[in-house]
View 1: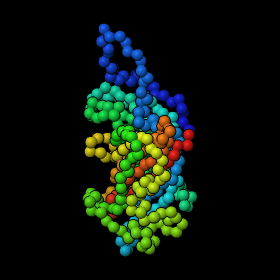
View 2: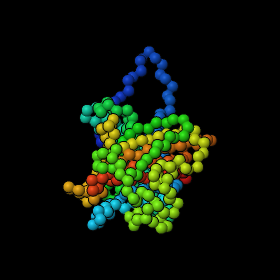
View 3: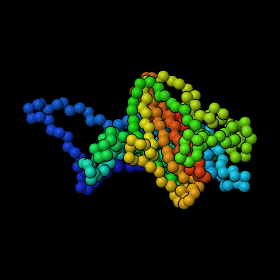
View 4: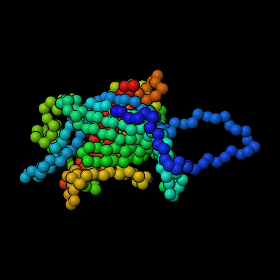
Length: 313
């Protein structure tokens, strides 16, 4: 991924942020401390990552006379995730409050099916840190901006925190549900690998895939070799968070449709765990779990992607 490593924004006129309160004249000047990295919790993402994972997607299928409207695609994946040089002092001018500056890194994510050696996903984007704001009144947050060539863009915003030890990885379900009613989960025959169907990945494509993985894709993360993890930085972002006014998704007309949609990306949530291993001073393992809800034919269909990646350099 090539980019100008020395790119710096040059806003005109220069951005003016709210000045810090001056020290009292009677006090001696304090010894200057090293300025904190404006990337904050995102600093650990820098570099190139690679590894394996698992992808589950209910994709639309041209409607059949039988009413069949879906195909369950399952992929054991190989992934490359590269983060480029940092962008600092990204200017944002304010109207309701003083100006702020963001900082971030752009990335390129490439995912292939490890069984069939076919490319599955290509995603350029950026992660940014957002400083605390007074209007809206929000603490420091992080955001992920991504563009997917199928015709969807996403903006996910959320929080970051660092804690001792390994992450606690929750369960996640691939069961679809009635639009707007997440408690009304639906069982379809394609979810059961013991049930023969032409509407699910088959043959060599199923190599290495178990029923446990299909039932709960996050078990793939828990099954990864467990080195001693001394600390974890958790980045949790969502396209819609009741506590944050930011975030959202946008789809081309083909996906969004008019009265009905072909496959409208309605909601995305993702958690990234940057793990520092024993004897390391920085994160060298990255695990993530992402849930996308695709809406079509009156149902929300989960699309879940997980992976365990290791820092290459």
